[in-house]
Length: 413
Ligand code: ATP
Image 1 (cartoon, rainbow, N blue to C red):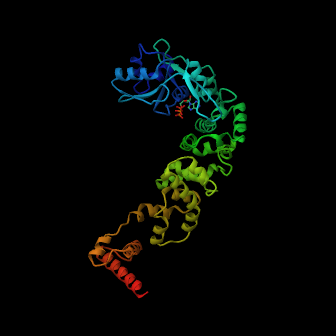
Image 2: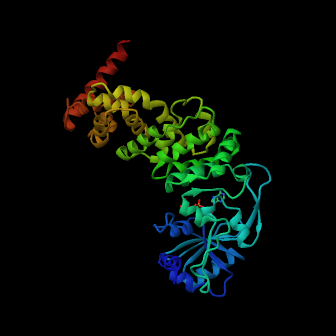
Image 3: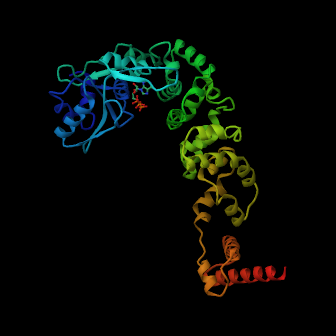
């Protein structure tokens, strides 16, 4: 058996899958799994891609029935996922794609495997390993992907590749960073040219978001951002965007310390120099209201937080400063040189401090429901954080005193 055949067989659930293929149209392992198996390392993406030279959805249904699993059909051209206990594979009918205008989604129609391979992004991702018993272990590699893997090269398949789909620019940066590869000279020239011509500004928000978040999710996101800056992809996404790999790396590190979302913290690091100008672009990425706000808040507030945290603060002041901030703002403040100690103290201790009394206790003690109650409780919490009161009785006495005083002051006005 060839080395490739034994690596394919060793994939979880693959033996059963191979046994369930007879009678189906030709099925091939494609995409990242082939690349990773040839590199000899683990397969990065646990969802394995299979190409079917025929009806992918029908093949998925029959495989699911034979393997006692389930097939989920996606409604997109001939694609379905088959899941069993130990296996998840995405099946797709082999197809050709035609691009109407740059950046648009392609028109799709069935085509033989070779054409399916020639619509792909890079030679290293454009190989197929047949899964039929007679051919297992052989490789279909019409674009020289195996040679590029050995040479450590990211190479596009044709001159118009980046124009047809500019998200490939970000994918190129991503693979170069992940694999430690270099862009082949002509690929690099075309990438710079497409970027300078504003290719990425023409991509729809959701597609740009997926490609950019994918890049920032790379383990070595700083290396990926270095390629982004080096190729001019940042300015191609938006003229005010200026990617700083060190800051992105520090933000990712800060995210690990603070429990922030690493990708959102890295995105905030990208936009923080021009948060006002880039706000609209952030909206364009269609991250959803909550995630957009977290990124925007982090980018807006981190410089102020970093400056404030350099001063000596009482626990109540620290709490007031950080309580309404998203974790990504704390991560970015760390990246900007804020001392870690107060941030970690806030996260570990202060953020969990709660009063033992509630507004209901004050109402039960005769305070009329009004905003006075909220303010009294807030001030009581501040004194508790500064260790000036402790225990339910002291809290209640202080909160009542503060509420009565506020009531008297309001009455006296
Ligand atoms: P990984 O998930 O490890 O990054 P992958 O190669 O599996 O690698 P996916 O994004 O899952 O990446 O894509 C699967 C395959 O689909 C790729 O290997 C590539 O052949 C093809 N592909 C994905 N995106 C594009 C694109 N924008 N243009 C052309 N081909 C693409």
